Amino acid sequence: MKNLLLLIDFTELSILSLEHALMLAKLNNSSLIFCHITDVNTEKNNNDINENFKPYLLKANEAGINHQTHIAYGSLINCAREVVARLKPDLVVVGTHGKHGILQHLFGSKIFNLVKELASPVLVVNNQSKLAENGFKKILIPVSLHDTYLQMLEKSINLLDKNGKIIIFAVVKYGIPLDNEITKNAQLAQTFLNQKGIENEYLEIVSDQYSAGYSKATLQYVKNQEIDLITIITKVSTQNNSFASVDKENIMLNDAGLAVLCVDC
Image (cartoon, rainbow, N blue to C red):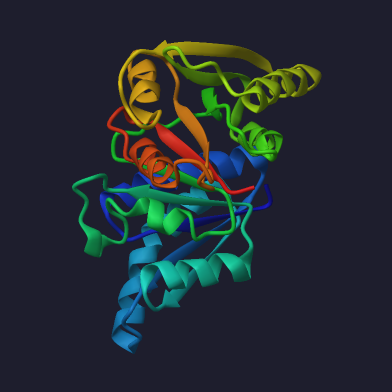
């Protein structure tokens, strides 16, 4: 990863997002772009924003990370989409204030509406996310039907600690066998990771809970585990479209403090 983009709103959550961005920049020898989006384009407002940037720039300097700032003007989602399309970062880092977030402070409970519009992978952190000092130690990747599943694995590897582990994860609904394509992707994933010398495990749990989606069973599993990152594909399946969207947003807004990597391959 050569370039990271950090979307910030100058709240305390932005400082936590910065720490994750700096960690990943050091891990991958990347440069960092600080971006703030505002709908006010005046000299005074621009001066205030540049002043607010200073603590972030100081931390980047202390970490030895090359960096630059960018102010974008317009509505949040449209503006973020345009910035990402133009700058083409390898990863976007953003914080969410969760289900009860302050929407006027950039990111709240509609985080999925933002993430699905961005062309680059997005790392979503919340105010409970713990900083992984040298990359994420244990990444959970729910297996999917998508034929781009291996591309999602490759994006995750960039965030993995050199001694980290990837768990290929499947939730089986009671009495319903896994789709053949899911089983095939799980096998391909393990072969791919083994070839790269990355520790991995295939884990399958059976859920007897009646629920339309899979986020509840997934989050229940990770609650007492040492997993510190979940990777999901932001594309929704053509099957159960609305449920897929709800599942993905529930994962992003988890209350377990897990960071979430969102990839649209």
